[in-house]
Length: 124
Ligand SMILES: C[S@@+](CC[C@H](N)C(=O)[O-])C[C@H]1O[C@@H](n2cnc3c(N)ncnc32)[C@H](O)[C@@H]1O
Image 1: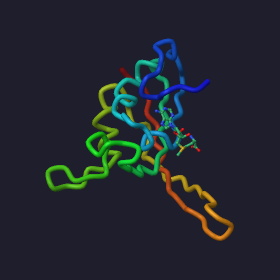
Image 2: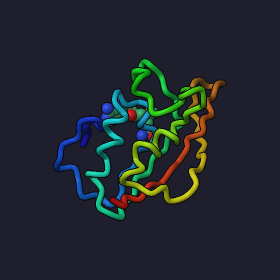
Image 3: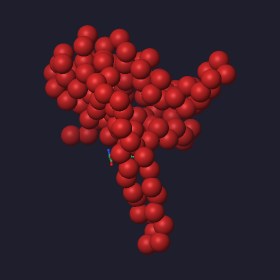
């Protein structure tokens, strides 16, 4: 099945695991997805977010970025933004980990990226 992560049908709920792999920085409204995703998970269920946090205006309007900008003169990271948005319903289960992946662009050129993986348990 395919669906818009920012406009999922209510029937898509009752899950124990939701995997958002290299997704959030491609969404047109990531806050919409992140602030409602708890409704789709059972209590004790796990949300896995993997992302290189490559925010680009071609995918997401700057004002809708989850992080990657300065706030009150300080760096505000996407992990800061995830904690702020998810904090009311989730517990960060362990320190996030970088997971590398490689995309072969041409026969001689490779893009090496670090995706940050964080695991969030629904607690409320
Ligand atoms: C960087 S790719 C990652 C693909 C795959 N999950 C992976 O990890 O290799 C981003 C994916 O997000 C999908 N995507 C973009 N906007 C979306 C949306 N609003 N709802 C659901 N998927 C979306 C794109 O179609 C694309 O497949």
